[in-house]
Image (cartoon, rainbow, N blue to C red):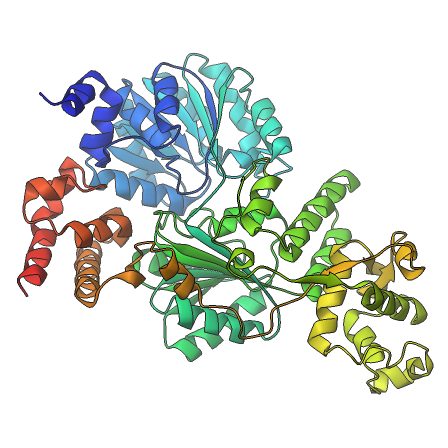
Length: 617
């Protein structure tokens, strides 16, 4: 008997991992977490999206006797996970508002009969007396609290109903609880521990790094055109998400992008009729190469692993939100891109929204600091991944080589004189005008507005003709980011000097600025990806590319017949292994990552037939 088989027999968790999920071994801290939970310990798990969080509770659920209860915040997430588990032959169900009373009653009957391995439930349903009483009569093997950051008011997705989950520690003290999240700073972690009563839980913190994601931030010039060029150059066939700040911009962008590309581009925001919103999400999850334009209302419950890009046309509100939203790309571990446009008006708009909100001053103070950290990330000249990971308390020793500032290092220069001119223009015009008007003054543009206020008579009028309008926008953007200018919310976005600006104006402090790259000089991300020899589908030979598309077509055909998303049949990463390995028989097919015993039975013949047909040709 081989050592691997002997180990599998001795370790039931490894046996489940291989037999059910089709993976040869655990990754990173998964083995330690799984063992801890199987032994009955509580755990707080911080692991990046795509790092395999779900296996940390799904494997223990299948090893420990009884049923696991998974608390999940969104209906779509429950449905996708249950679909995927059923494909693996696991007895799973969900209980939420999408079910009618007969369907809900059937799930409750299965729970009472002990017929389920896992049940997914919304937090508000879980804490009802009826459901708690049902669980009290059932053998529960563990509680998994997914998206645990929702319990914190400091988190970016705070959900009040999560606060009630502390009742589980009181009602079921002997049942292990595992709380999981992909994004939590120190304050949010402390909240999770306190509010979920996990003071005695073992804390497992994985690296926040998503090395397969390429990070890129570009100066906002013509954002829709820039987005179009990015998609057509780097992701002409791929599924992706485009985030916008407003509902109107979502709809406008979706319509424009569909017209320009000829692709299926769908809008998603809270203002859409619920049926249309759900239909658009369903088309995105079950389709191939669909793009969604959305507000932040979209995405937390999306389990689609082959989203190849996430684009932001507007700044998110914090680095946590940015990390969470960009983390929806490349969950399967294959190369993906996080692309964002960024301009001075983004900062002005977000700061106005923050100051005009009704949040307590303490929360506003924290949110200001988070926004400043995000702006600092956008303006950094160093490796973006180093800056991002540092925010979450993690150090990356060397530049990543997989972000725009690594591909083409950013040039910095002494911008003291330019800063003095910009600050002087803001001061002499009364500190109540935005960057656009100040640039007109600096460049000597005799606009009607400049003449109306007599700003063409100022000493600063025409003193900045050495820079283009776009170059001055970069200067003002960086002065705001560095805290030398701030938004005056009472003057509708006017810029005013901060106390720190005085030393610059008087010549007592120098200012270094980064030089924005000229439009069109950036190398293609596809070229950069090819340089890394990543093994992405883009790097396949012509013959292998035909096989890749044929396998995807067969997967889509099978998925449509069952009414499930294609990725619950096989992830792209598993299809890619089929292309690379070209298995000729069931034994070889069964050894591919992501192919468990049940899937060999259900799909082996169908996919082997496609492979044989292409190999013969």
